[in-house]
Length: 198
Image 1 (cartoon, helix red, strand yellow):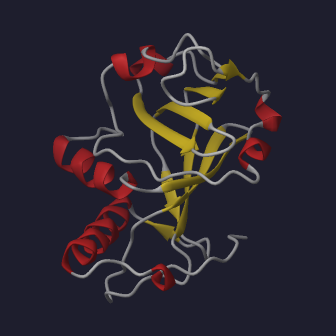
Image 2 (cartoon, rainbow, N blue to C red; image 1 turned 135 degrees about the horizontal axis):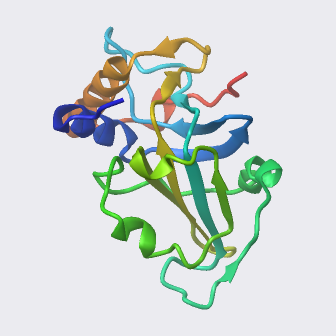
């Protein structure tokens, strides 16, 4: 998958201000469940704004899971086994991912936390030639958690709460409509109902 600037801009917008529900490693793929800002072509909000992003035949995934704030150099780094990863998100109340860029960022984005690795899985020896996505999550307050994620990938697919696949173009266009709504009138809490994705 070759990501040009226009596609990168659309995807970056689609990931912006989303919230991670979980990350899981499933055989040769990485799955992420995100709550996203999204409005369909009929200018309606979905009954459930969570989208499943599946990185098939990923190259590598590295995660730093720290018990502390992002700037706490003494925060405990929790080691995670691949089959434990998904459960590490159970019960967390995570903030949304603020920032406008996620796809194919500079190496510094990774090296800033690469000495604090909790999990590092290589699935393809050619991972260094692949696209990357950088995600992060924070739980603030009583039990502070900081999670940084980089995934190296060739391609990914997007599925809605009914497990219907969306094209990347739909993913980006739905996000654009949602953001337009945000700028115009805002988005009320009731616009996004919470139901579990099957």
